[in-house]
Image (cartoon, rainbow, N blue to C red; front, side, top):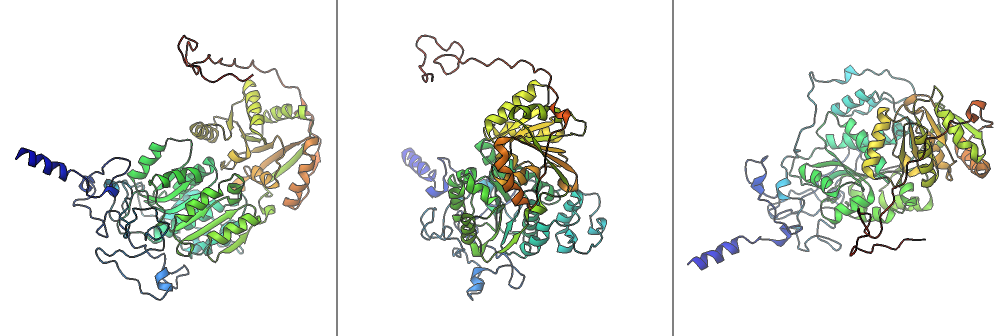
Length: 566
């Protein structure tokens, strides 16, 4: 009898469906979720089963109708045990599905105990307001030829955040793209950094999510909107901007970037719902492969700085990501690029559906708020000119750009030895160090930031008084990106470029892009003054022998390690 009882208990303890286990662990019981008073049952009668995608908008509202409505089929509600097909072949277990291979999906999305009902998040980050806010508290007069944010009928909580940020009138990219994006149409924008495109697509995304809430059951790791950007700094900046605009909402913003602990980002995804996901391509693909992120219910896809992702070799990864989203007819796509080559044009054709293209000319980017100087200088004169420029009273904060990482390292070391509070941003710096450096620069603890072009694209800080091009960029578009770090939000800024003989051929393409000539001049005498002596360089740590740097590394019996290169 005891033996039979043990057999029965052992049989009951086995999982009913192997697809419910992930990474060798059995899921917690669904009743473990303290937010549900009753047992949470999957909507379709199957764990993680396919649920019907909510239509983006009703017909006639300016957005795209549901694909079933387009084909003349009335929308049918799912019957219990009969899940409807969505526009995503992966969700329908058609060829190319990466699920369990069984019709109906039966795939696990996140942990069972992380499922939420009614679209509720784990925590409510919406700040408590003393009194209800009304748009009348943010009066902005009408001006001929300018569009106000008031004119779009945005959600009240979003307008409240816009009022806090002081956004009154739209920039050209915002005025042209917002009316289309708010209707659910695909938009392709040719615009440089500093034009306000980030605020444009975030405003459209947030307003859409607020106007079309999901009341049905949602799943951990299932994003509603996705923003893909090429660099970690740009991802963090976009997420910071999104959090400011979502200040009075319950929307949850998540970031996925390399160089940060995978488990920590994974836990955040499991602990709350994902409304807006901002990510770099490589790290996002890692999470998709590990089945921690699911994109088959995505409503809005934003691709930012597509040309830069093309240059950095990220497009194959982005292609894999886009394949996991709904068909282009069933999602909204907002596509932005500073330049449009044949390769970028092909991406637009593949990823967007009947888009409207908006182009902002570069001359409106290198604005009248930036005073540009090009000083002729020999190579050995460049560093003294930089040092003396930093000492001037009108220099509050300064970013210096160089083309190569070794140049940036050398400049950072020299400025540090001259007792200047300086930080370094480049691709070889660990992510946590880059974040702390940016925060220190924002807070004024650092006066100077040395950066490469790739790292500098993620710097969106108001109040930067000067930008220095220690070397002129090889790509004309990078010049516009660099000087766009100053003169932001209508404030005045100064750009100073050092041009030696090697830079002579780089200036004409920049002038052609800007549509204006830049005067080359001799540097002022005060910039050529002799610099004080530097502090001695810090002694380099000598690595131990064959033990990989451990103390006492050459003990008998230790590891050989790698042979030293001569």
